[in-house]
Image (tube, rainbow, N blue to C red; front, side, top):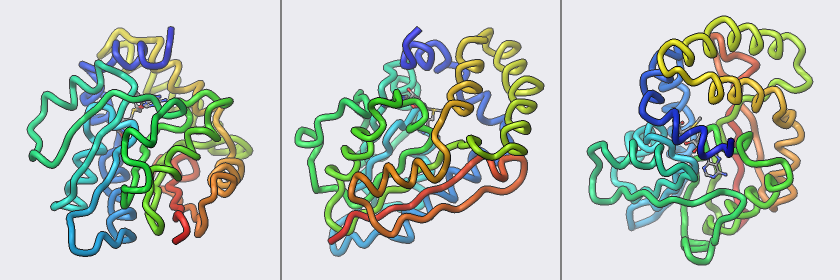
Length: 236
Ligand SMILES: C[S@@+](CC[C@H](N)C(=O)[O-])C[C@H]1O[C@@H](n2cnc3c(N)ncnc32)[C@H](O)[C@@H]1O
């Protein structure tokens, strides 16, 4: 099954499942604040993209961090977008279906965005499209704009990798089956993290796309060593 079809199927229960994940919303808020603290929008409201906005949890975090912002949520899954659109949003927030790795930056406003948050996107982009997806974010940003990526990565980290296996098979997958009857999505979630880049490989992708000032911060709690927040700037 295609990734977006897996998310379509899981969309109605997605908020419930992530709500059970201790620290999920707190880490999204931390990533959104990392973006908010870096952007310099000047006189006009900041223009921000929430890339892979899903059901809108990360969009909400962005909006809370930069209250006056214009926010465009993009996601490949029609089901997740429908869940996001069903929520209450100010008129400055909009949503569009689009697939990272196959975006049209010119149509979306190349060079016109102050910041992009991509929370839990990149491991879902097929490995052969990941460099393209990173290049698309670079093209969308204005000079001096910031990309913030939140992503799970356990490759090359033995202890974190084992904790990820145990967390998935003892908690995440059983809960996904119990509450959503959706073994496929939560098994995919486990596997996509196991197969994702090392943090160093991912930083190299960002550098190859042209980003500078690339840095990584870890998470706390059970996600320590598993979840990472990357920041990167498009040069002026
Ligand atoms: C784990 S959810 C995260 C959603 C949201 N960012 C959040 O933090 O709650 C991952 C989202 O990525 C979307 N996605 C997967 N591959 C994508 C791609 N290539 N382009 C855009 N969205 C994608 C899925 O449809 C799903 O909504």
